[in-house]
Length: 274
Image (cartoon, rainbow, N blue to C red; front, side, top):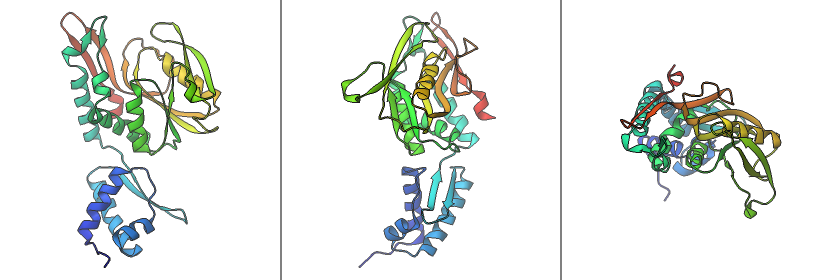
């Protein structure tokens, strides 16, 4: 005997399914088979979920017409949740014990923390939810967790640019670029199989000082004949004012590191909250 589910059970299951696989188009047949219910019943369920998601400011649910259509959940953060996440991130990144010799900040533990990275990715994916993105592109190493989690929310694959060539990557494209912070010439490479021509990509990185790495990644994308629809970084330094790239999005702005008293001055990018 095939089990029948009550509406409140279906609503709860729908919320779970959408949350676990955002930006994925589900067919009505898929839900009909899971819940053993008519498409008309599923349509009513989705209307309820859609209204609930909008009222709770969790994002939006859209229906797509046509033979290949269905329903898709797009997580878009409200201002209140965005502000809360950015404030929490500032508190984490500003902890005094993070300053290490040379005036640097230890960030590895945070960029390897799934909860922290998930919140970062929620904001980035939310800001670019309306863009038609085919790939997330990042450079090794600390940016990888953020890129992977952002890709999960946007339902796209990740391409990782390497600092050095690897035999397992096959044929690669390599370019030299100038570091925006040290003015040193460095090399980055990417497998030719990583991206399709004319793809639309979002560049994601953990930290930006002068913008040299971000510019290098954008230059690399031109070698693949793809379109960069945006660049997102978790933290940018206030200085230098002029970066080597324009039209980028940062979540946090690092104003100053005071080694003497152990304070880190970091604040949200207030443009995100407008």
